[in-house]
Image (tube, rainbow, N blue to C red; front, side, top):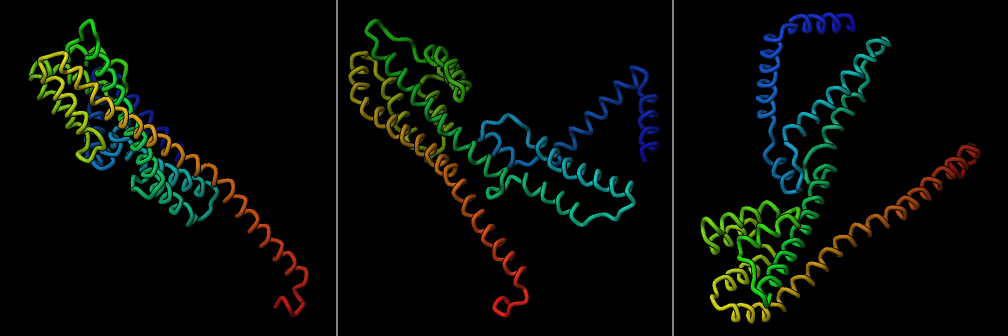
Length: 283
């Protein structure tokens, strides 16, 4: 098998030795690989990856899953063939286990990890949104004049990671389509059941709709309590999320200790039973 593989590899090298043939072969191989990737594209997995903030194609994840299981199975089959041993029944089961563990289902490890990353991304994104509205409030309350909305969004976008691209596009839309439509588009990027996006929308629309700077400043001072409450709720939500993770980490040693005690007790009972196997009380 190794000799046949080497001969095939040598034949491929000879075939693509010329530059023109090599370019055509690589191009054809790339087209076939892309077409295969589109066939195994998982829209649900891609949606989970996008929500988790991971810039990875779902097709690559799917190809990696099946390739890992297939490679493991082939390696075990070749090893059994070389050792002249029958194929173990555990090898297909382990390959199936690889596919199961890397499945994007919510209750499985990969799916749980993606859901956890999604929750973490939402908390970070909400935190940046609160920081943005705080900066906007400080900008409008400046005594020496404030920066226009479009320029303000473009200037502050570089300070954020999760809403950076949205703020750049918000700046462009504010110039091209108008501030009101741009704000509606920006707030529409968040879920409908978002905790405070409606408050942010109302504050931005009302403030940008006022021509009198003094009136806008007074309005923002009145809405400062709402912004403070949003910040407090976000702080509690963030630390509650971290507290849940910390609780799980702290519970793991206790569970491991309990299981170890149970295992030791069972081993002790089996040891006594083995030493006194002839005694009637153990039968």
